[in-house]
Length: 136
Image (tube, rainbow, N blue to C red; front, side):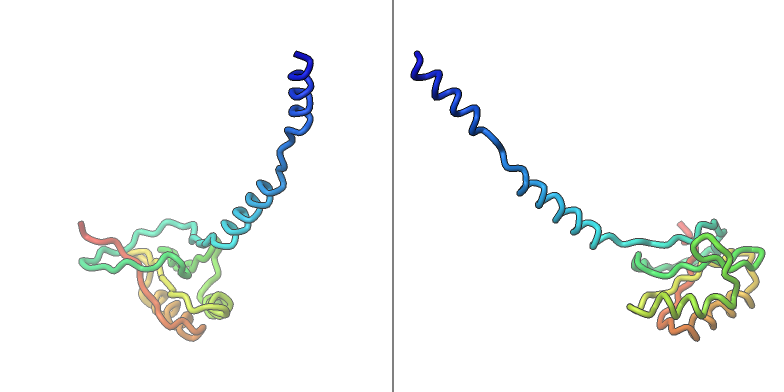
């Protein structure tokens, strides 16, 4: 019996598990998920969009600009005004070409919406879309 008890003691002392490969794997997964995450900047203002009969689905990675009833131009939860659209678009489209989506409220002045669209074009936006509600 003494012979078996010696083997059990030796097995217990050598039963260490090397955790470094597991930690390496977790860090690689963490880096992968951080790099592949897409951040969408919401306008943080709710608009009553006009009603349309036809609509197209757009890609999720885009620049969203809201125009309220009070003719405020909102991006990222703050009022940037019409004059702030062109510099914003230039900065956002510096690295890659993204579509610009305008979210005008149904009660917003059409002149303000057109001015925002023109500023976006002057900022370098190739595609500009207007968001609306579909009739369903």
